[in-house]
Image (cartoon, rainbow over all chains, first blue to last red):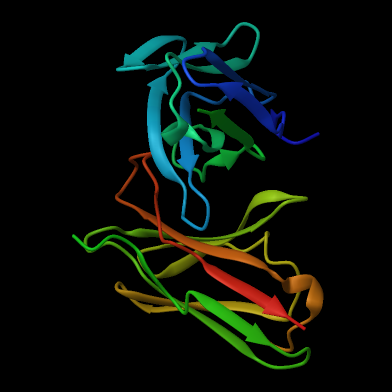
Length: 110
Length: 113
C-alpha cells in the first residue's frame, strides 16, 4: 500500500461547480500536508499547505485535514476552466522527503 | 529568482545510449531532489541530496541510474545504458532547510526508442 493514496480520476465538472478532491494516508507520523497543482507539461506548484488537523482557506480553495481518519481534502469553490490541472496531495513528517499521491486530473468545462 | 532550471526540456534517444539530465536548484536551497513521473506510478522519488551529499538513493531503479551534485548550484542524473522503460518525465526540485515547501523545475520529457 502506498503511503498516500489518491483517486486518479479523471474528474470532469461544469464551470461554477464545487470540486472535492481527496486523499488518504497511512503514516501516523505525517504532520504537514500539501496540495500541489500541475498544469500540462509543467512541474507541480505548491497550492496549499497545512500543518496538522484543521482547515485552511485561500480564496476559492480550502484544504482540510482530519488526522483521526487520515483524510486530506481540497475543495474548490466556483471552479473555473483555469483550474483544469492535475492536483497532487503530499504529506511529510519532519525532515524527510514529501510523499506524493498519484494525482487527480481535473477538467472544468465552460 | 529564476526558479529551478532543468535541461534539456525534451530528450529523444535510442535504447542503449547514455542520457544526462541537468538541474540548477534555486540559489540558497540546500536540498535537491530528483523525481520521475509516469501515468502508472505517479511521482516517484529517485534520490535526494543535502548540502551536495546524497542522503537517500533507495529510489534509484537500478545501477544504470546515477546522480551527482558536484556543487550547490548543479546536479546531474545519468542513465547508462537507457532503456524504453525509462521513458518518463524527470523532475528536479529544491527546498531550503527544513521547510517543507518544495519547488519544482519544468521537467525533462525523456523518450527512449
